[in-house]
Amino acid sequence: MGCWWEGVDESRLLIAPADPGSNGDGSARLISLRHPKSGVTTSYLLSNRLLQELHWFKQSYGSWFLGDYVSEDGSLYTATPIDPVFIMLPIFEEARMKKVDDPGKFRQLDEILFINDYPGYRHLFSIAENCMQVVCEIKEIGSSKFFRLDDTKVLAWLNYKVCQLKQTLPALDQNYAARDEKDTLADAISIIGEYLKHEPWLKLLSNHFKLNLLEATRIASDFEACSNAIESPMGASNPSQGKTRGEKKTARNQKQAKKAKIETESRNIKEMFSRASRRRN
Image 1: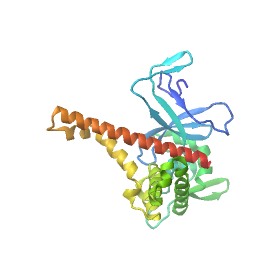
Image 2: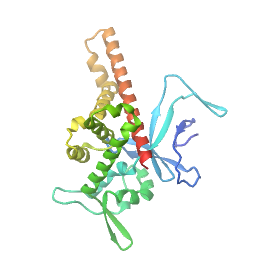
Image 3: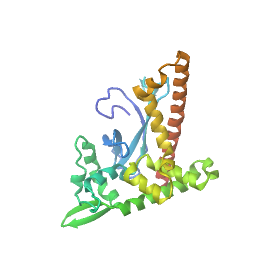
Image 4: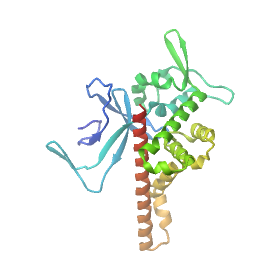
């Protein structure tokens, strides 16, 4: 694929699934949204009403032959479908302005999806109504619809996601077949937990399955801690103070090896999650 987003002057290689319901015009748009867990600005691909998250992979050396063109950047982008409810859950949570003794306000979609500095949410308007019905209460006044997130519906939806993923994991990886059921359940919650804030949803989900929150999120926590230790200037420099050059090099190599291992594990788990989602759909 060529220059498929603004500001990119060179071609990049993107592998994305085709939408069976598309009209064949190949229309696609790269949009910036807040990551549902971290809130960090993240790019997503919206193609024929199918929302997809992007993953990036690059080897140390490599290029791509794209027809008669050689792309010196050997990096590879892949796009995998993601349930839009994950992306919009924190937006709807904020919009209802819930209080301790008040379930919150009903709002129209154009209000909920109007987020300062994030015009990408406006492009989700066409898919928001159908997908958010499963987790929202809806009131109709005349021709207008008003939405309010419902805790009971959200928890039921998350419970369904966890149970489906728990059943699918052994079919995707034979190593899960020999694992304890509780461990498989914890892994399923860990995977889904990468898309949920700790408060309130991940905590409620863990309590529902009677799992310790730290146990249920160990994969995401390990990956985040390792990334911070290596990428943060403070994390990279402080542990090396007072050490010899050889000790610094060994520590750095150990960190890089640990990061590579965790990144590979995280990428494999995300791919299993995407394959499980596609199989269920």
